Length: 255
Image 1 (cartoon, rainbow, N blue to C red):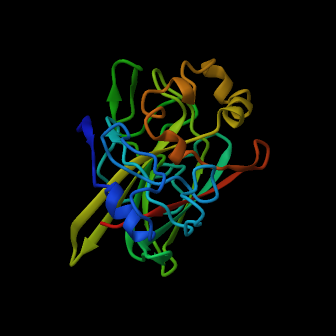
Image 2 (cartoon, rainbow, N blue to C red):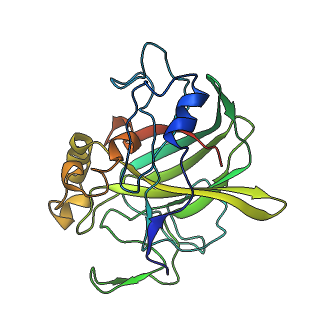
């Protein structure tokens, strides 16, 4: 288990990103995330660059892999249970769809066959496949809430999971990485994290089984990683805690 403290992959430089959108260096960009990478605000946001509108795909900031990544080859859409059998992890259902594009001049070109790995904690803040003495769990041999999909011809990949719980020192989030595979070899990678709106999390975590863990100790605003680029990684979740939520995340991948 590698507790990597560096982002995997690289976001476009500020100059390159502005050039792709046909903008001079006088355009407005949000820059210098935690690792000095530059990225553009999401579409239709208050930070839209100049008078021109961005295409649907946007460049996103990389964030650290963290200590809980485990290499696996679980090609599956529904990641809620162990692959060897067992009950589905309890929690509010979440359908998460990724839309991966190549950022071209004022357009988004779908990127098929991109491998997207997702891993996250359960409703109690526990990850599968690892031992953590600080949070006192040992789930080695299990693989719930992990898996990957390949993007289709439209650059899309969808996962059936649950709304994450929380663990000490972090706001509510999940992890994903994208890999470009050429002739069976990984030729490019990008890793980051996705965050959830605090008001939605409050509503979800007030319910069982989340509420047995108690109140989380970090909001997005007090999470060190969120404060450095997390607003561009915040999911727009739709739905309710009774029937579940859906969220779509667009990302421009130019590696």
